[in-house]
Length: 454
Length: 80
Image 1 (cartoon, each protein chain N blue to C red):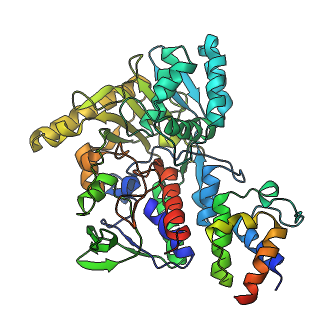
Image 2: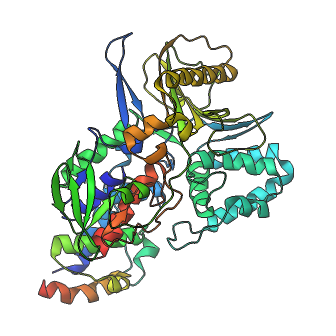
Image 3: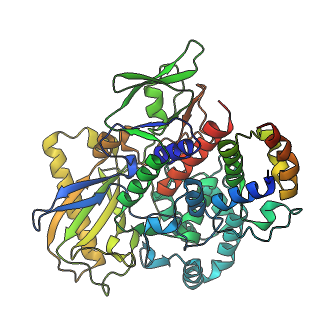
């Protein structure tokens, strides 16, 4: 999506643009796929990565990341068909914190459940409000350390960090404070929604706009090499067997992945460790509202949130459970869908022989269904369909090494690489998620394609 | 060439929700409208695209008010 957004910005101002996509559908880490519906005929469509679109705003709100995105891409709010969440909750042993698109809910939850620490929480909120997270020159600082300076209750820190880490950290256990601020604002101040029709709605919107402004996309056209001249400056790419010369190259495949295809790029950005398993279940009926009315549950069965690769294929004690039917005004079929995400371990999954791979997926499915039973004990829906994708599935389809969903731990912040004219956009530039990746494409296209004159 | 109107037209296209009808020419545009640096970039890009007028990066501050836009851009339009 960062590539499509960048392409739109450049083509809009009459730059000649071609977006090169390895697969047959666009979207990368946030694409979609289809499976035949054998029960009712037709197809079921699934989003690869989308639990939620963060950065929710109401129509007409200004000065927020999503409104900037709309202006920059000249898209209208209504085109996105956003269905807001009902609410989400952070569910630790014997304690829950709810949050919604109204920040007051989280405030009152903290007030109620951590009464002695509400002043500290307010102090954190003020610090977040005053912080300039978009400064591209900031140095890394630990969120955990910063939080410990402000909040003296460890459990409160763990619970606040939980959704922010799993929805946006490439680092194990901790995150850069600038990233913490971005995520805090995106999830807690702003909130979640889901476009009617899922991620495909967004992708179609971007494709249509790109075409309108005169940009070109080539599918099934993987870039096999980034070409450089004798000075080591990027001059073009080798893609689909053809040499395409260009004065500016924006790569959204990831930083380590870009290094792999650029002989003159001699840096070693580290492949991230965070990868996940996603299970999707479709039942013959929806989960009843009186049993499950939340949109997303961040579940953790211990008081400490361990955001790191699973020790044993998947960490069944910690999960993100998404009920996409609980986005407001969702027009869905009579079926009920549940998505459950676990932290995984790439090396273990990559070394499983085929026979054991399927057996392990079966264990994931059992664990996920057991968790669902815990959250909705009276639900008696019949399972019609399930799909589980592992770190190796993610790697195969997105080409991100080790199936890292949040990319490298070495972000490029301003997109620059040591190779002149070659820039990184998307996850490894540093803005994560769907809104993040589009803003990344926009900012990098602005900075390197429009402002710095070619 | 009504440079003032040209700038206002561009702003209305970039920020359609903004009220451009009662702007104070001497006050900063950012104070009166919700325009950030990305929007200013777009003003510059539209000037180039629609009118072939170039504004180098170091001159961006000259577009701070409608009045300064007009005095800075008018000579550029004369040669464009």
